[in-house]
Length: 488
View 1 (cartoon, rainbow, N blue to C red):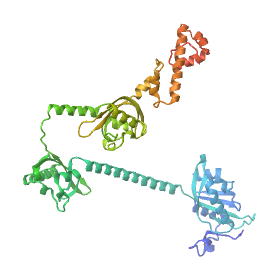
View 2: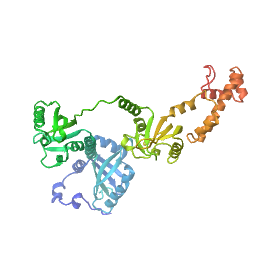
View 3: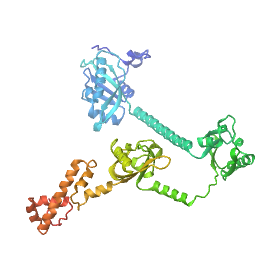
View 4: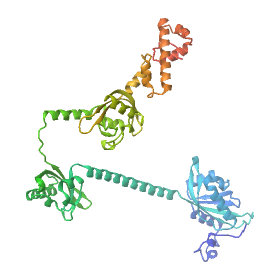
């Protein structure tokens, strides 16, 4: 190893031109203070990387370094992923190369580590012992890391706010576009049209999208005057009453609700146009049909209408809930067996029976939701061949609670062959066998207790069980055990 004094100035541009004259007279204490001041951590190492001494810029680093670093090889004081960087620094030191600043993670208390950036210079051999040493200058990167974390957190918060506003904008844009009410947004200063929804285009006609269109051109003179008055009242007081307007085309009458909102530095009018329609009174028969339609829509059982091939035409709210679908538009045109029964099996059986008999009652199957739910149901169906469009109607009832109570009841009796057959395909074979075994075991225990006059010891002997085993089974089947009986 080259033992000549290799300073940082010999390897760096812009070094002192008269270093010997400026610093040659300084003693060891002054040089020690200068070295300590230049970095947060200064390690003194021998040529093998053993830390012989260290200086620290503050008490926290002093406590950590004196306890965990001094007297150990440098590579043992850093984390696993930093050891290759330490070896690279030591190789550069051994070959008298200029070392670049490298970031290391050095162990501290409680298994934590400190981010430090190190650069190493080689010192000349000592006059007393002739050994070559090196100085490792370390910078504490925690303030920089904390600042980076703050910037990262701020960036994440900005991204969250951006996407939140984006989602809100999307939702309100969707509501604006699908609303059945005609809506217009006008600039409050120029009355220029800034936005409109499809319902407004349908009400006001194609002129709406022409350049230079004004709302006055779509109103008669009296309505235009009334609307301008409503604009003035809104700007003056912030409130305005609904205004009745007449559209020239077809003498259509509408009720205009005007609101004021501000965006950035400009004000805008939001105009909602509601057609004023006079509807004839419903006949008693029509009222009855309307009531029936409302009852079916609110029925607790799922109701769904399909074409003759099982393609969904309409359904009530209960069906949407069971299918875990947000609105009816998402199910229209879809095959019913997407949700009902085993795909391609149960619906074929139902449709085949409907074609032969017109009616199916209490067909047991399963309903699947789009979000993964599965519900045991009973289906009754009818084929309607009259009317303009032949269709199939289905009522679907959730029977999962009924099945659950049947399987858990302590008074269950043996199922008939027909009942067992109904469970096939709806309940796994393992569960059917387990339930049947439990029923037989419970009935035998109850019979033994009845024959022995409720004597547990005799009943256990009759059944070939220990008393403790009998108590376990009594508790399992919900048969009361006196409080003074021993625990199993």
